[in-house]
Length: 118
Image 1 (cartoon, rainbow, N blue to C red):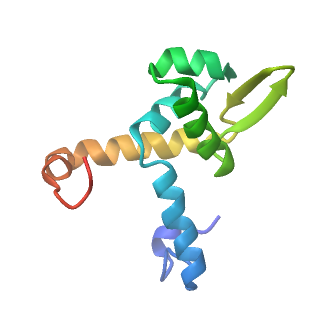
Image 2 (cartoon, rainbow, N blue to C red):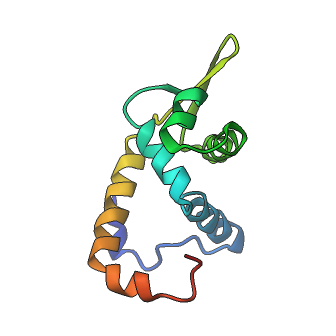
């Protein structure tokens, strides 16, 4: 595998490719979606379990899970009237751990940042 840090460009050269990567990060840019990702990381959970975990209304949780599923972060399995969600790609956990580490290193700057919604 090529060391991406040594390539001339990290992003695709076409605008569509860059837009897809930005969309990828926007999907992870919500605290509730991050909590849900962590919750379904190691085992399948139903929507009801996810609702209990995050403490939001079922329609909001379903919307967040739908976003994560639509963007490919979680896999959906239907069983009768129940819908189950889980992370299937271990790189998702690696990505969140990397983000946690980077944000910890830059916590003061991120906290003070007025350009990004809080």
